Image (cartoon, rainbow, N blue to C red; front, side, top):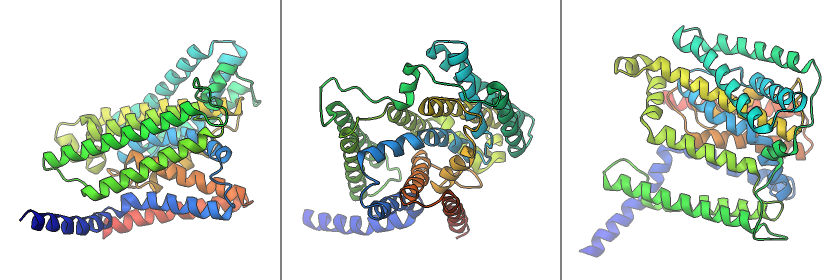
Length: 398
């Protein structure tokens, strides 16, 4: 009897896994696309893409895009976009340079003032959008022009730098290695292994809780396979980075933000209400949700993370320039759409936005290594963006 039950369960599992993947191809398709793109460029660049130095540069080059994509996802989920984020990045970098380089402020209070300025910028734009119902496209387009001009005014059209060495560590620093590894940063490798094990255990616990309470969840075999692959990828990346300088400081910042936003969107009432707002604003409002305050808060978070991205970008360049942040809004919005966010709102995941950002980053990096010009890179990114939105609309209509 038991053997019959086990065989039936095994057969059900074998059928369930392919069916689950088929039904969720939109979610896991982008992850597969990232893997395929990385394998393609690894082959085309003769192994250069996955070398420790290039992986480190890839993380540093895309850190500010990933940071902004987390907040932009919430904005897009509500059904709008923020076009001002690139200009806010430039403005905050300029403000930080004025405070730290010209006025000689300590980098900690200067950083706090910059983050507060980002929150005020996001709150001001969110106020007009949420409470006065002015279209977000118009408000943020105006913000893009205003803060680009304010950046030029702050810098007087010139670059300002260098920043204090301690501030530069935000983007150029690495986790110290008290264990004293020479050719291998042991501390960074151990952190990667611990994180991989922690994520594996937490995922299994979440799956077990869903099964216990009868909630819809992934097939057990798929959960095991997915987490084994993810854990191997995390440990492999940590090992590669550990053979160079270890884990970058900004990678830790990104990871903490990713975990925080993932918890917020999946485990909190406010996070779920944001999705309800994007799915049907009228129904959400009639059910008692304060939709205006929700949208206002998403723009505040967008302002704060844009400010943080501006500080990271300025620290990496070690200077504030009038052209900082130009075009960033397009990369950030594209990352969210490519990662599975819906153009009509209500759909999108934090992991998807991060994957979308790295798809853009890997393509940029790989094409640069191959010597492909910026003109053709823009063409390829535009085609990928349109294709991603087309797939979203096609699946929704289907």
